[in-house]
Amino acid sequence: MAYLPHNDERRRAMLKTIGVGSIDDLLRPIPSEIRQQGPIDIPPALAESDVDLLAEQLAAKNAVAGGFDSFLGGGIYDHYIPAAVDHVAARSEFYTAYTPYQPEVAQGTLQATYEYQSMVRRLTGMEVAQASMYDGGSATAEAALLAMAETGRGKIVIAGALNPRYRSILETYLSAQTVTIETANRPDGSTDFDRLAQLVDDNAACVIMSSPNYFGGLEDWARGAEIAHARGALLIAVFHPISLGLLRSPGECGADVAVGEGQCLGNPPAFGGPLLGLFATRKKFIRRLPGRLVGKTVDARGVMAFVTTLQTREQHIRREKATSNICTAQALLATRAAIYMAMLGKQGITTLAKTCLDRAHYLAENIARIPGYSVPFGPAFFNEFVVEAPANARTILARLRQQRILGGIELAGRFPGFDRRFLVCVTEKHSRATLDRFVAALREAGQQAGAGASDSMTVGGAAAR
Image (cartoon, rainbow, N blue to C red; front, side, top):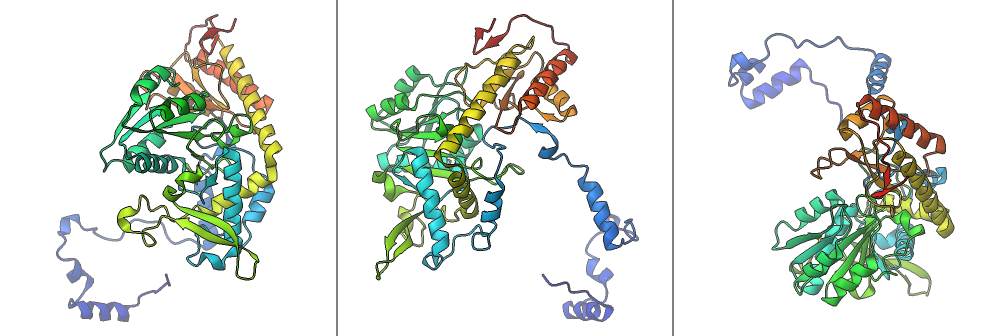
């Protein structure tokens, strides 16, 4: 907007136009007792350089993640991003978050999306991947809509501990429909397969199973798929992209739809985002795919070309047949993810996954040796695990922040009875020294909280020694 200063002549002209004699006449309908009397008490104007200095001083009061050792996860992860990702993604031809309305003109944009889709498809072991979604939660909800449309059923079964934000998004998406959502999990957050088998009946559209689950535990997608398919339901596998460097892919385990959060693929955590929804499925469901799908073909001269092959936007299909209006692709974030995956390659992602796994287990074993602490939810986890503290988790985490450590995510707010538990995440950015410092800080925080020392140390519910 242009800067348009007013002078007295213009003010008089405007007042005359609206038929009042002065500003006071204009404001007369407002009772005088609630109007500001006299000038507003604000500091005098500053020079631009002084404003800059003041802004810097105010900004310095903020706590930024880079100034802490952060063990936060829960769906958003702090991985090292090679400088080349920023450099390539910042090229002017990529630096837009929006898909052009005449996409075939932008062959480079379409090729970048096509490469992204191809990498997601290979990573998940699925047959088709689309051009990106808002986030992992919306991808999960869209997968449920796909399953309901495909089966004509109205029941969704969540197996194990799904990210509570994903569940909230799912419930919001389905709030206007007649849908039943059931949960089959044990107190430790893992899947209760006996309960799952009971809940999956002829009205079940799908089973949603996250692995790792929200508490970090690894789940058996293949067993979930077997139970779902036996009753004509679909398996929606929620995955952690980097974990697939070590674990069997959703496709190998029989999943019908694979969804996940792609922020960890070359996109930094910042104020809870930006996020990138990954969505892949079987070819037989391609007509129910939300969002856009970019394909490769040849033009009239036989030259390779990229085209927008499918999209579910209401303008392009009958409105009553549309299941979704996911049309603004997270194109820039998807491009960054493609660059990141291309740079790491298959071996690089495997090495990265193993580093995260090893360091997370190193930390868990050392935390379990601190008197009063335990790692209660089993040894099968990837890069996140639950810690039980000898005192209220909020107290422990507050003491860690005093040492510039973001120790994890409190679980009490969403999980009753978890007052002393918090979720810890480890990535390749945590050095051995950082992990040891965390253990020492936890020990000190526990002692300050007045925790009684105990010789009982547990990892995964079993005595460690």
